[in-house]
Structures are given as C-alpha cells and as structure tokens.
Image (cartoon, rainbow, N blue to C red; front, side):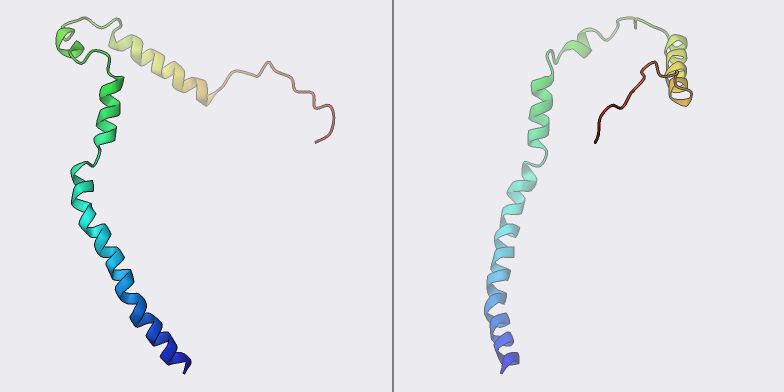
Length: 95
C-alpha cells in the first residue's frame, strides 16, 4: 500500500517539476542576451572621460622602467623581511 502511495505521489509531482524546468528554460535566451549588461553599465558610469586614451596616447610616462622595477623589488622585500613592530600590546583585563 505504501509503495503505491509513493508511486502516485511521484506520478503527480513529476509534471509539476518538469513544468517548472520549462519555465526557466524558456526565459534563458532573454537572460543570455543581457548577460554582463550590468557590468558594462557600471564600467561606463565609472569612466570620466571615454576619449582620454585616444587624446593622451602620445604622452610620456612620469617614470621609467628601472624606477618601477626597483619600487616593485622593495615592495616585495618588505613582505619577505618586514620591519620590526614598534607597537607594544599590554593585555590588561580579561577576555
């Protein structure tokens, strides 16, 4: 008797589940057509002057490659051997 009840519930529930899948499948082309739209809008809103790269393409950089490389090396070295801490933490109280 219990097996028949489970079979009846499964037969009744299966069309409802499949119709839910069909609803999402039919909406997918619309979602795919607008995929990434919000990201593109946010990037466009954050750009102050879209023509700046074409207008300023011939400007000379403020620094050269050697200075940038040395700065990157010093930055990386600061993580390998950080300077000693100057903060002393005295734990007073509980917790």
